[in-house]
Amino acid sequence: MEYEQLKLNNQLCFRLYTATRLTLGAYHPYLDPLGITYPQYLVLLVLWEQDKQPVCDIAKRLMLDTNTVTPLLQRMEKAGLLLRTKGKTDTRQRIVSLTEKGLTMREQAKHIPECLSANILEKMGSLEELTTLVPTLDKLIEGLSERRIGC
Amino acid sequence: MEYEQLKLNNQLCFRLYTATRLTLGAYHPYLDPLGITYPQYLVLLVLWEQDKQPVCDIAKRLMLDTNTVTPLLQRMEKAGLLLRTKGKTDTRQRIVSLTEKGLTMREQAKHIPECLSANILEKMGSLEELTTLVPTLDKLIEGLSERRIGC
DNA sequence: AATATTTATATCGTGCGCGATGTTTTTAAA
DNA sequence: TTTAAAAACATCGCGCACGATATAAATATT
Image 1: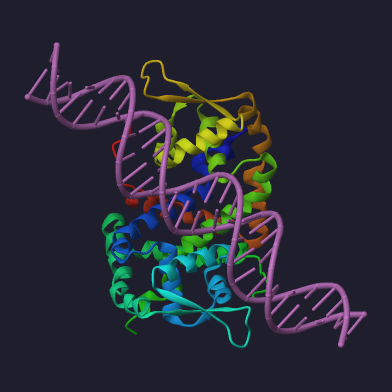
Image 2: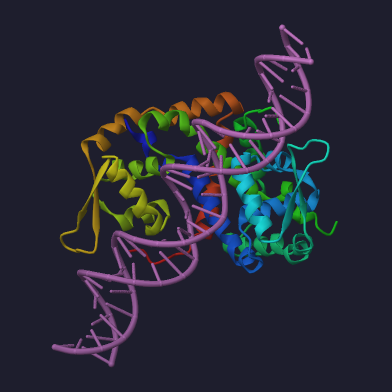
C-alpha cells in the first residue's frame, strides 16, 4: 500500500491530540465552578508551588512562550487571581503573585486530581495503565523540546 | 503533603498537553511548505482515505464537532483544497470533495510520516517505545469519548 | 563611555476548539 | 396530517497557541 502511512489510524500524533482534547474536556466539570480554564489551572499549579515568579519562569515551567502566557496572566489578573508587579532588581520583569482569591482557590482545587482520577478509573477500568505513559511522554517531551536557553 | 497531587509534575494531563503541542510543532516544517495546518492535514487524511463525505462523517472521524470542522472546511475550500456541495438525497448535508489540488497534495504529503518518524527517532533514540503508547491512548480515548449517537 | 547584543515582556494577527445558539430539513409521534 | 422531535450544518464569542514583530532595559563588546 503506497499511502498506508497516511491513514489516520496509523497516526500517533492524532491519538495524542485527541486524547489531550478529551482529557482537557474531563476537567471542565471541575474547573467551570472555579471560573478558570485548564491553562489557567496550570498557572495556578505553578504559583501554588512557588509564589512570586517572573513571567519567564512560569512560561518556562509550562513550556510555553510569553506571547501565550502574557495574555493568559492578563486575563487572570483581570479575574482577580493574581497581580503583575514590576520587578525591583530587573525592571524588565513582571513578578506574578497570587491574590487572596488565587491563594484560597487552592483549597477548592485540592480534590480535583483525585476526582479526575476516579472519573477516568470509572471509564477506563485501570489507572495503572495510564501511569505507564508517563516515562515515555517525558522522553518524547524531552526530545522535542528545543533546549532554548531560558530567561 | 496535603497538596502533593496539585504539583505540576504529578499531572498526566499536562504531559499529554505538552507532548501534543510539541509534536504538532514538529509537523510545521513539513506542513508549512504545503500551506496547511495540522487539523487541515487531518481532514486531508480522512478525505484521501474516502472522498466525498458529509461534514458530519469527517467530524465524527476526527472526534470533533461541526462548530470546529465547518470553519476548518470553509478555510480549506477558500484555499482551493476541497468543495462543499449540497447533498442530493439529504439537502441538509454538505458533501465535501477534494479538488485536483487537494488530491495531488497526497503525493507531496506521502513522505511526511516517515520524515517525522526519522526526526523523532533522531531526537528520542527509539521509536518502538512510542508505539507502546498507542493501545493505552486508544483505551483512554475510548473511555473519554461520550458515545454520542453519530449523525 | 558609546555601541551592540541579548533578555524580558508585550502586541498583533490567524487558526483552531468549543460552548451556546440558530436555521433548515428530515424523521417520528400524536 | 399536523405537530413535535431530532439531525445536519452554520454562526457567534471567547480563550488559547504561536509566528512575527516591537519596546525597553540589562548585559556584553569595542
